[in-house]
Each structure stands twice: as C-alpha cells, then as structure tokens.
Image (cartoon, rainbow, N blue to C red; front, top):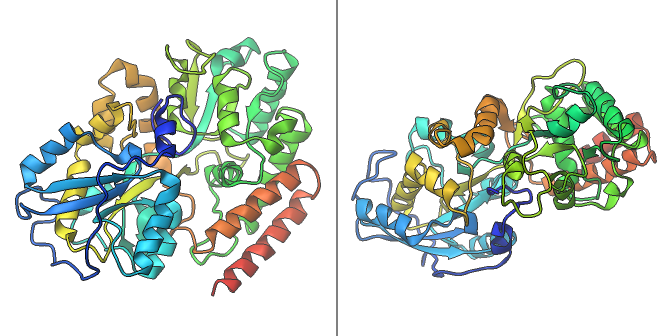
Length: 447
C-alpha cells in the first residue's frame, strides 16, 4: 500500500509514528542566505561544498543510495532528520518563533500554508524553480499564499470514491453511481440483496477526517467550502444543505454503520479493505491496491475495485477532486536557500519520483504526469495509475487560495455539525445556517 495521509496497508504507517532521527541538523543562523546564484530549476555544482538539512517525515526520506545521486551531481551534502509527521509542525513553530530555521528544507502540509505564510516563515520559490516545475505539480495552487508559491508538492494525495464492483455486481449493478441519489439507491439495493449490512463507509466521529468527506461532496458537486475571503460559500448555493441532507439520508436509511459516530477513518478504510463495506465515500487513490495478493488485512484480494470521481448532486457531477497534499518548503531563515532549491528540483525529477513510489518505506504517489506515466508502464500499477491520470485534471485545493489561519476551528465545527445532522439532532437547513454563522464568528475573532 502506498503512502497517503489516510490509512495504509503496510507497516509504513508504523514508521511514521516513530521519530527516527538519522542526523539532527538545523541552520545555525536566522540571517538570510544569498540570492539564487544558479538558473531556476538547474541541477549543477553552483553550491558544491554546501551541506543542507532536511526536516521531513519517513515517506519523504530517500535512501542514502538515492541521495548519493544528488550529491554526485551537485556536490551538496544532505543531512536528514526524519520525524513523525504529527511532531513536525510543532518543531517548525518552535524554531521559527526563536528566529531560527528548523532546517533548510522542511515538510509543509496544506493545512499549514496560511499560518506559515502569514508569519513570513517561508521563502517564495518563484525565483528558484521554473514555472513548469511549479505548475506541473498537481495541487501546487494549494501552496500559494497571497500570490507567492511557498511550497512544491511532492506527495499526490487527493480524494475520490472507491467502489467494490464485485460486490455491486452481486446486487445486479454493473457500473458505479455518479450522483448522490444513485449512490443511495445502489446502497439500498446492496443491503436488500444481503451483500453487506452497511454498504457505505464514512466516518462520523468529531475529527478532521469527518470533515473531509463533506468537503469531497461539496467540491465534487462543483461548489466551494469557503470563498477566497473566508466566507461560508457552502451556504450560498444550496449545496451545503443538500449535502447535509444526503448524509442524513444515508444514516437514516441504514446504509451507514450506526457505529460510524465513533469510527475513525482508519476503521472505515479497514471495513472496505476487509470486505464489510462496498463503498469508501472519500477514498485515497491507493486503496485500489487492496485487491492485490499479500496485502495485509485485505479480504478483497482479486475483487474488482474502481477509484473514480466522487459523486455529485443532481445538478453537477464533474466538479473538483480535493487535494490533501504535502509539499517541501524552504524557510526564509535558511542560509542555504539556493542549495535547498536545487534539492527541490532534484527530487521533482521523474527518476526520484518513481524511486519514492517503489520504495516500500516511502510509497509516495508522484505529483507529476511524467512520473505517473512512467509508472504506468508497469502492469502492476495500471489500475491505480490509470485512475489517477483520469482524475488528474480535476485535482484542486479544498479551499481556493488556501485554508484560513482559523481553519482548525472551522473543521472542528464542521465535524460536529455533520455528526449532529446524521443523528437527526438538527435539520440540514438549520445546520447550514448555524455553521455559516459560526464560521463568520470564528473569522471575525481571528482578525
């Protein structure tokens, strides 16, 4: 199973929980480094003799043999501090608050963009990378802050919907649904035919991962969650209410496990992989590999799995597939910005992208079409890569312009609202009105 911010089938997830420090190293001074001395996107020996440091999770850590290629071509030595993902944010904040660069190259999650951008902690990449490098990386607009590119995506993590078509065909259904109404009808048919008790998997606990399926539904239907000013776009076009009604209808009709109010996304994923559900509403691409032999915990080996665009409402079925990506960034306080940028260019090459995907300790899905097309030459990758290439043009940020600095509070309110709607504690119409008002309050408090 390849890397994604969602659950994985191999022991890769375990390595992300542990902080395995290879070499701890950070920039010694907050002073700005010299301007870029090489051509943007170049990989040469302009900075030979320089040592740069990285602060990244395990899946962004290349093996020494791969890093040797970078050193041989540039003369730049790389020292890597591999840290559990959940600890990286705080390490960065602590270092930056004291005026120090935590490393020369750092992890940047899409949810951190506004916080780090507003603080001025990250170096704009426009003079270090080419336009083709930036624009050619899927989801790059998620890492733009006030018109400046502050991160280069390296991990292609986005959401579609996964269907077990082997189970669907047992209920006489030959193709995946494309609308919410069709999905609900099909799920009822699966349940009535005794194929599975709870066909649709979706988490309903109060957590970030419960908000994600709602974002998936809104954006797949052609709507927006928040507008570029941080206002509640979900409340202006009727999609917010209709999406809440769909969630309520799924829960009330019994096609979602009643226990979903306490389930994590990992448990929802395991239900799909274990063959007890037929649909993962907001799925990560590599779940389609669960039908391959030797996948830990999989009871659906040999089943026909499809990863496709998430269903839309009756008015639109061709909206966005939301990007939940990770990027690499360069702290403004780094003293080795040019050398760090050269590393970004190197890791963005097709050879390194393919190596990162094939390494079981990384398993990172490439962000460039060139690398995906290279992977597609291997028949073992055809189902996954074919699905990804089909959806590639639809990948867009969850929130155009990036999440606001108060995003964490907003997502918590969304998750709590979703659970209340599912349980019938509040009507979809009242839920939209209340969430819209709460969103405005949070935004105003953050000013």
